Length: 185
Image (cartoon, rainbow, N blue to C red; front, side):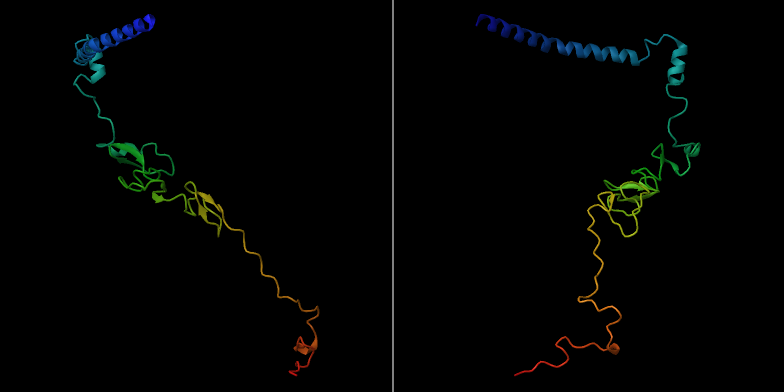
């Protein structure tokens, strides 16, 4: 019992010290972060010029906002790169900019050649863009012909089948009861 009480007292003391010293550690780390961002530790003028352009900002701002032509440089075939929200995006396949900047496809839909397409049910984009289902086959759950019913059997000729040779009789068939109407007696 004495050992358990000693352990409990040690845990309580350690927890108390951590709670008391934690604010001092946080304040010290914030002070150290501020002193490095002010540039007081960067003693080299060359390093200062290289890191922030010597003017306090980047020499060229990133992105394509003022230079949209950079998006079309080195454009791979089949893509349509445009500057949308200061980023070069392919508007033929980007779901957030489908066809035009800002045109967003609904959830679970994909952008196929600049048009939003539900690839779960589209026969022309089944499961992925450009995957076409065969003629007469439907697209379910992104798979061509999923759970499609078996094809209907071909119709069979009526029963009984006519005898070979056309049945004879000059084109006129005999009645089933033998040629005479049944008597009503």
